[in-house]
Amino acid sequence: MTHEEDDEVTQHLRADAARTKGVPDDLWDRIDADLSQGGVRDAVVSQPTGVRQLLGLLGVGVVGLLLVAIQGIRSDLTTGEWQRFVINALPLVATGHAVSAFSLGHRGNHRPLPGLAVAAAWAVMIGSTLLDDWPGVHGVPYSMHWWCFGMTSLATLVALVWLTWLERASKPVVWRVGSAAAGAGLVAYVFQSVFCPGVDPFHLLVGHGAASVIWAVIGGLVALGLALRDEPKGSG
Image 1 (cartoon, one colour):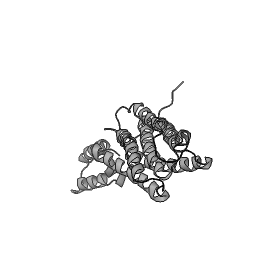
Image 2 (cartoon, helix red, strand yellow; image 1 turned 120 degrees about the vertical axis):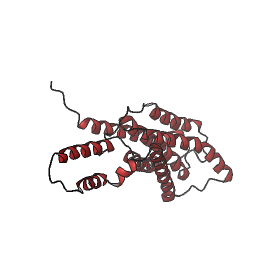
Image 3 (cartoon, one colour; image 1 turned 90 degrees about the vertical axis):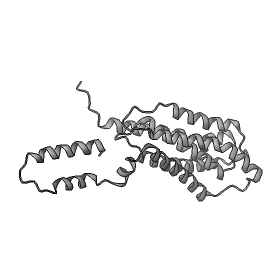
Image 4 (cartoon, one colour; image 1 turned 30 degrees about the vertical axis):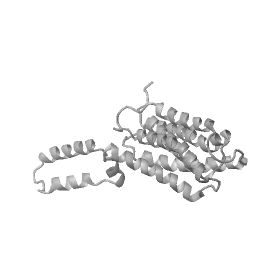
């Protein structure tokens, strides 16, 4: 329940009780105490936008680090290759975090964000594969496509759930959910590359990058279905 709804309920109860004789003196205190009791999510989403965005970014980063901790770090990254890897990765991680933070918006009940954020994240991801400047080998077994896609998808989905949990809107906003998935997928794409040395463009697109696109689409469709679920049906 939002703060606006809390205020409306409180005003209604106060007006109704004011017309009733014999009201206990502590009724208003009890009403306020009951209405102020919310869950953890209520407390989090009531925080300023900047705080929610910071929490969102921290969560996405933690998911990426957990992915690295679970899979490990590839052995072919020498000191010089690490430097080149970081140079390539930083713009992608920054873009993914920016899109993730952007997806939380300023007010959940305002107009949805444009799809430009989703398109930008996809373009950066696809462009990074075409640059083909990641260190490592070019050939990978075909089974690695499925492994990388599965692990990147898992990280993307966990980060997406975290970002949508921080969303303030009462109903899912399609473009915000899609943007969150695209941003989280882009970050997961980079952290998966810490483990996988394959830099073949096809592998990066299918094994790493497809998770960003697919979960953005799935997340957007699920959000659309939930947003339309309670809409009144036409009479005709």
